[in-house]
Length: 448
Image (cartoon, rainbow, N blue to C red; front, side):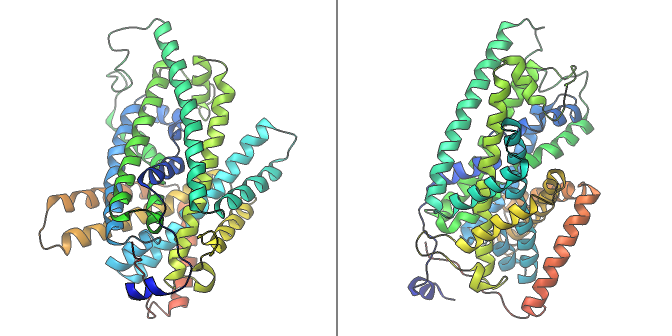
């Protein structure tokens, strides 16, 4: 379909209303500004206390993939994200496989957030059963997302301010505790970065492989390309800046935690280690941190459902999924309402049948496949097919691809099996829908 035809038809379209700041807020909320808190204990044990170092290495690693996403968004400012990039640059069939892996990633994110929020809310209000909280959060996510993307951006702003305020309180309490208690100079403040007594390359690299997964979600920014002002510039900037913001925040959070609770001291509960750290700094932070993590997962689930709906819209519009349902946009709110309801229904039903742990690992299975696909597409477009072969065009996608491949190969066996079943089912549907991909998929690059 030509750009002229796209511009002149009367079908409802997504609206370009999101600024660079809106995109950054969306990315920060989806990744969560408190991302390392829930896995701090696991990271500390795996890295023998070198959590800060692992977080910073992981940030650099994810920046390579983030650059590939941003550069491909310049070429294809489409809601289809990785699905469109890979299909256009490699092959429609490979693009479909990448898009189907992203569907698993995006569909599971709001699902596991529904599970986590319901369990945490039940701890605060045990008189309401967990199943009641699951219904509540799935419905709230859906209702907020059908109000339009600008409404979601305003909610993201409010949540970012709320989480930012709590993080500031944690920082202040941590600083007071650290400065108010004796410590052993001169290496006390540098030990979280490097402790010669416990440093091992294998331990730090193992910790980094887990820390990298805390950045998953930044790719959701690219699904908003059709609703962003100046997408060819802002998507790349927002993706890179989001990784940097999350990386710096995460590094400060775990740095202070390591100063308060050295790696030589065992945690009462590894899974809730950061809550114990916060409680040691200031007792009232126990419930405050719990509420903050609830808020973070709420924002992540809300943002992930937004991204999933737009990914399905991109695939539906391109005929990879039934176009009459998935490719429709609500004229009043300018959102793919059918998709929002569909993702909400899957999250609600899945929350009753899938465990949080398996869901999280399956999410990583799909996300890493998509990351590898985008890096491969960026390599082909900006290096293989480019007239001028520049190192800048080969290093980010190649390094990003190899890192993602290594992480994907180290996923657990149950996640690999469940993810493979999902992929086989999706590929079988794609083969049937397109007659072995002989029927072309139509890719639309909308006017800016």
